[in-house]
Image (tube, rainbow, N blue to C red; front, top):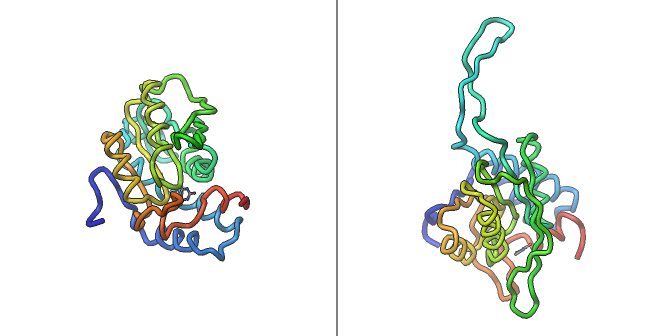
Length: 213
Ligand code: URA
């Protein structure tokens, strides 16, 4: 893929790239993987929230009064695509502890290969909130596309998508379906293999973070 596609932000910060390399390494333990995912999530969220609106508030420091900035509007919503999204969610909540949380459970129908929703819970008033949907791996993008469609049906208007790794095929599909949603990722890898794994990737993110097979 030549250059970064429109609507995609690759966070090429040295700390992000270092942590990602350790996560990719097959020798990295479950505990190490989970910890690094949590750490990297904060750095990705930092980029995904760069343009949040601020408002002036009047406060008193121990020394003087001043006008200072605070986040404007309603609390953010972090929407985790189960189960791997939860690994990123933890680190995002470290950074923005007051955020509201949505969970979206999707499985892949073995015949149609399309995502089927089995769980959905989200705050009511999505139309007035910035919603950040998270899943570590943007592979085919089928789950991400379905999750964002659902959030839009529930009224969300300002949506961003945060992942750790993306495949060019997934980005293309995602951008075709939701061109209004910015993607923030640590890297865009080479391709998807026949089993739907990102190459070189890091394997199955859920298995690596929970020690399952
Ligand atoms: N999901 C994963 O966990 N890993 C991949 O490489 C693709 C999808």
